[in-house]
Image (cartoon, rainbow, N blue to C red):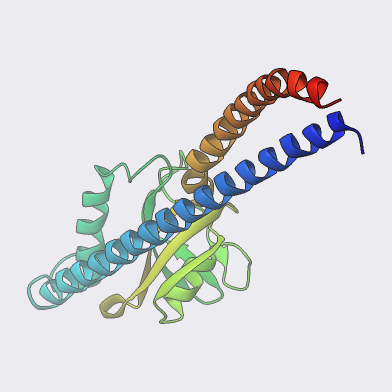
Length: 213
């Protein structure tokens, strides 16, 4: 192997090691951010569910004369509160739904639609995966398709007093986007720095190689 090839191999090794270290660092940061967002969504879904249940218990006692009954009174208050709530982040939102037969019926206006209420989703569909869990009396988190068919990170929670489910969710791409940008910028910077370093390395080592020869 020639001297130049050896130098070139050293530069390639330096580039690979630097890229690998950067990729590992960004991956660890992403996992930390993902876990933090997951915990935030769980807290949001659980607090909203418990709040709705508290309102429902109150209305069950004091709003019996409301047109449609106490459940309608509760839903009216929740809808009014969410009318003035734009959501969190660029894509984050709450969804509230109930099951009627084989369909998931959404009860709140969502930020991603111009219409008041999204169309019902078949319970057996691959869409609205987090809400299916909530309406199956489960609580937790999942990465899956929402009612739009977008991949989201979601926390789901049943609303026991009303036989409904609530989901706090955010598009997965919104969580990933800053790390994609950071990875791209870091990759470009590393390539430029390694290229400059390689040039300096060659200039410094070339006289030494000549002397050795």
